[in-house]
Amino acid sequence: MTALPGYYTATEAAEKLGYRDGSYLSRQCSQGKIQAYKVGNVWLIPEIWVETKATETPRGQGNRGLVRK
Image (cartoon, rainbow, N blue to C red):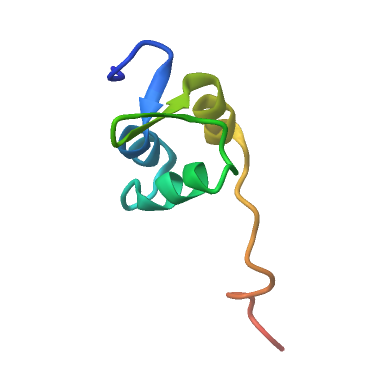
């Protein structure tokens, strides 16, 4: 259940996407990297964006963790 139908707060979106807290998403919103709306001191992120990001496969961090010969 979201705070506003069709939108997630940065904290709700962070919880759904697996982030520790909403600070990273809030920063992305303020920099314009995420199309979001600020109402008071709360960033509202469209539900469609969050759902799209939730289905994307995460990009890897290079070859960290690979067993070397």
